[in-house]
Image (tube, rainbow, N blue to C red; front, top):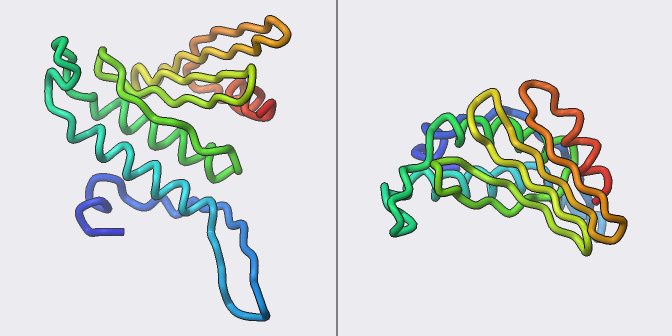
Length: 146
């Protein structure tokens, strides 16, 4: 990891290792660390967005939203969650999205202590909207459905 990236997003040391070897060699692939590095890179790109990035007057992405997304999503990725698609929100937040078939899960990082969860499974008409503060169990429960 580059020094500049490490200054913005220090390494948490949290890693889930999925490794494999081929031909008796020492080839290792660390899926968890790769996903976490990709997350950091995505968040760094969003942190660099200027004010009015959407041409409709959106503010810069909040450092608090980036920090909350980094902490929560790093934990999820280290636990084996699939990588989300990361997008900025027009209110200066971060949204993480997972989509698979008829299922969608969206997490909107509003502040360091507030995450808005939206889950929908169109195939069975299941919709769930919750405001989470410190209990991330509903996120783990919904991700287990992917």
